[in-house]
Length: 227
Image 1: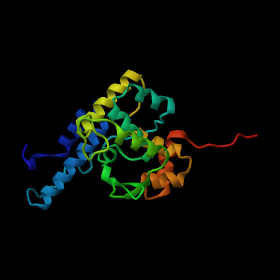
Image 2: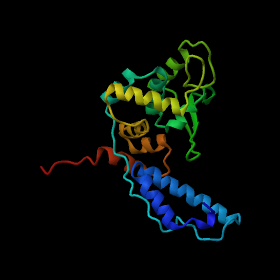
Image 3: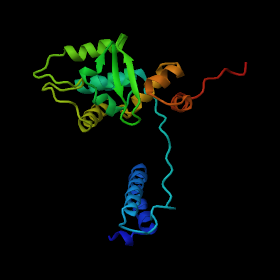
Image 4: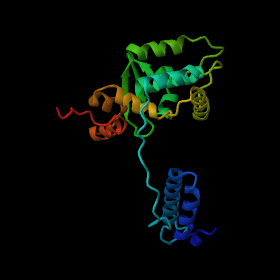
């Protein structure tokens, strides 16, 4: 379709069709189209108004899934060792899946695991103590045919890709008959600290309100009874 022929009605039609199966993805794809069209305007490919303007997206509801310890362990019991490593690191560090997968041995220095978050650029040094130290020691000491720089790697030293993580995690989740997403582990980490200040620092949130919403949406407010 020529760029000058794209009208809001076409965006709406696309949204309605795509939204039948994936409303959130439809919203993201409309945002991408809007960004592309704005760039086209900047570069002189068109002088028309952005056709995405005024086209309403679908309402999105934030996730409220809290993973219990039992559910977490059930999935780990069915998972490939690379997924177990990723799950443990995600829980103990509170980081997003992409940030967990990119961790390298060289990121461990001066007694801390140093992370630069992909999404925000936030720099964070997580002390390598307690359970985190034990998990990292288990990963580093595991026998392999080949060894690479990545913390999460298979027997041949190959890093675990996001596609492989999702595929292997989904398989373990199905076998365990437990329904949660890998990204929910970050929320579990925030909730299980029991300390909002700790959670805010661990997750790299810029403000306390973001952390409070993250935690309360999963466990709710704790209040005393009337009497």
